[in-house]
Amino acid sequence: MFTFGQIPTYESDESIVLNVSDDKRALTLLFSDLQTTVGGSKSPAPVSTRIFSLVLPLEGKVNRVEIEFFVAGYIFAPVGATASIVFSINGQNTVADFSGESDKEFYKT
Image 1 (spheres, rainbow, N blue to C red):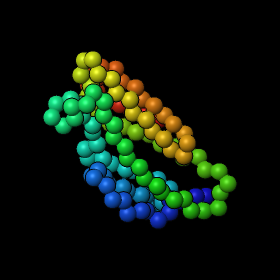
Image 2: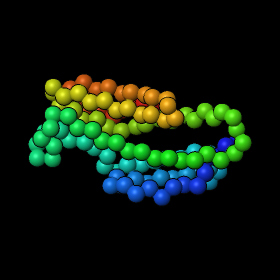
Image 3: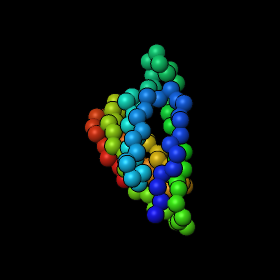
Image 4: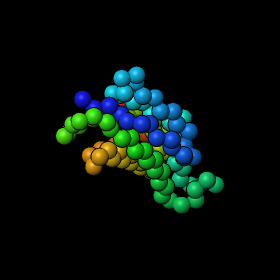
């Protein structure tokens, strides 16, 4: 059996809340305002990227660990815009693509 190890102190400009269950087998990472903007005064460039990284060590004697994860959020992309969200966890990648005129919640496993 594995557990999440010592929770790191993370210095970031992101406002996050990291909660680990009492048994250290599950965690929740909440962002209050993770967003990127294209155009206007914040970013005149036609492309914008936002990256967040976190390292959580595992403890316990195991040869292989399978961790299930999911992401939920909200996407707003006006007509003509596209957005992609890439999740990479231990070399396993998941991509969520959104076409223009997206204004909805999303859930990705």
